[in-house]
Length: 57
Image 1: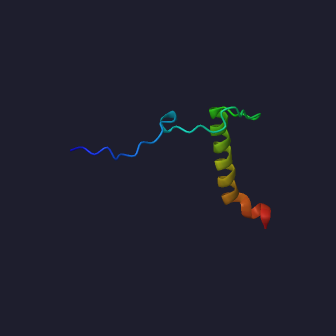
Image 2: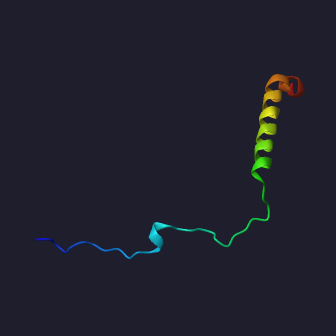
């Protein structure tokens, strides 16, 4: 005998939740610009490790 005591939840959007669908940022960066900016920051950090003592002492 099969039991019909199962709990049934309402089906709503298949478990997908969407946030800020209508929000559009005024500032947008291309992926290439983000990569170049990261590389520049890495180079600046490396230069500060080598030559930073001379500038800040």
